[in-house]
Structures are given as C-alpha cells and as structure tokens.
Length: 186
Length: 202
Image (cartoon, rainbow over all chains, first blue to last red; front, top):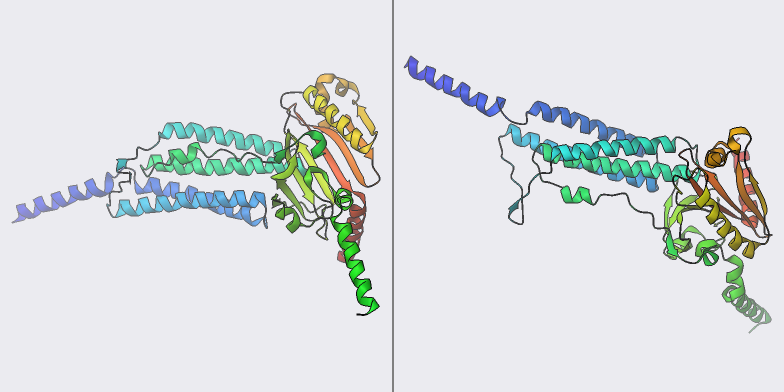
C-alpha cells in the first residue's frame, strides 16, 4: 500500500513539474512583459491628457488603443497558460505562422532611432508650424512602435500574427489638397 | 403694402446681389481656395480637413488638409480664426528640401514663388543677407537661417493682405520655404480682441 502511495505521489509531483514548471513561456516572462506594456499604456494616457483635442491627441489615442490591445492579448495568454488552455488561431482554415521575433526586433530598433531623431528635431523649436509637424512625426512613429510591440509579443507568444497589419502601418502621408498651378494657389 | 416693406425688400435684394456678385467673392478670396472671414464650419463644408492644434497665439488654429487648392511642394498649412471664428491668417509651409546646406533648391523655388507673388501683390521689399564670419559661407546658409544670423525673406505691401515669403533653415542642413498671409482688417480686429482679453485676465 505504501509503495502504491509513493508511486502515486511521485507521479503527481512529476505531473505538476511537467505542467507548471516547464511551461514555455513562463508566467514570469509574461508578467514582466505585461508590466512593461502597462507602463507604456499609463505613459501614453498621461501624454494624451496634456491635449484637449487635435491631430496629436488623435495619434496618441491610437497608440493607447494599440497598447491596450497588446495588454489584453498578453492577459488572455496568461490566463490561458494558468488554465492550461491551448490557443490555436486559424484564418480561413490555415495556420497563421508568427512573424520572426528577430525581424521585428530590428524594426523596433529602427523605430526607436526614428523617434529619437524626430524628438531631437522637435526640440529645436519652441512652437509654430514646424514644431507642430515635427511633433506629429514623433506621434506617428510612436504609433508605429506600439504596433511593432503588438507584432513582437504576438510572435514571442505565438499569438495571431499581425504581419500584414504592421507592414502597412506607415506614417500617414500629408494630403495638403488639390495641387494647382502656383498662381492659382497663391 | 407700406413703403417700409418695399424699402426692406429692395435692401434685401441689393444685399443678395452684392453677396452673390463675383466682385464680392473675389474681394474675400484668400489663398489656397479659402475665403477671408469664413468660419470653421464654412471651411469644413468646403471639404477641408481641419485638425485643431494646441497653439492659440492667433486664436483657434488648425492644421488644414485637403484644401481646394495647394502648391505642388506644400507640406502643410495652419489657418487661424482669431477669437471670433473668422479666418484671418494662413501659413503655408513646404516639404523639407533635404541635404542642401547651401539652400540651392529652396532658393530656386523661392524665386519662382517670388515671381508669382510679385505679379499678384506688387514689388516686395526683400531682405537677402548672410550673417558675418562663418555664417557668410555659402555652405552655412541654412544653419545661418536657423541661428537667426542670415535672413532670406520678402515682404509685400498689399493694402488688404500682409504677405511674407521666406526661407527657414534647419540644423540638419535642410530648408523649407514658407508664406505668411494675414488679412489686415481681420488681424487688426483680432489683435484688439486679444488685447482686451489679456487686459481682462490681468
């Protein structure tokens, strides 16, 4: 009887280790990423609160929503891990392969460099149209970075790929209006 | 029917004729297909996309896109409505002429615009000067503009509209042209209301 109980106990311990300690990724990793994203959301919301309306605020709000999507996605993954639910995503009956994490890391690094350059440029002005355009550029690049983070965590945790979404998420080109000869516009 | 009724009717007809006449439209015609004195709703009704900006130096101001008319190398336009919701100021700015520390491309475009504006607003008073010492070097042109050591602009003395065409430099060795338009009568009204507003808040 004692032998049977020992076997059952060892089996239970092995099962526990297999289920909870070898999960990849770990909930610790997820918690750390969730904390990072939560911090980003808080910062973006604080930035948004500085503006009462306008183009810049709309860009920041887009960023907030993208970051919230990432946060919600990671929370869903965390809940799935804890409850041992296997998440499988199908689009039109086909498995969606995740984007390469290393590729997205390069894109994230590029986006951060572009943000630094845009911030430096905006810092050269104390106001006016050029600063407005430079700040808009900063806000646009930050939206791109938020989208890249969404893609990054999707790839890292093998969640639905948004590769197509990211590849089309370039800065919105300005549309000044109907181009006419100089004399007509002036 | 009384004489007063006919007088009112005639006055209304005259007013309608004046408002609908081409001369009235031309009088209020502003650059980029806009109209001086138009309010925000009227501008939006013309299909213009307006995004409010935080800077209130000239009252309620907006980044305007999808304008009825635009210049080929225009990147943006900021239009201001003062405190009484009447279009009184327009700033047009070009795309960035990159990697051009001597400002060669920007100067060529400046000359083209100068010619067109001169045709419309008469001969301007131009200031084209380089700064001293290092700023006098041609390859420091955009840097000199950025630092406020060199100047490149032209003021037009139109009685109705104040116009200034200029080049502004950036640290990166790039430049843009920009044009300021101010409706003199509406700007006078704006400055007066701004003065009263500031006086009231002190």
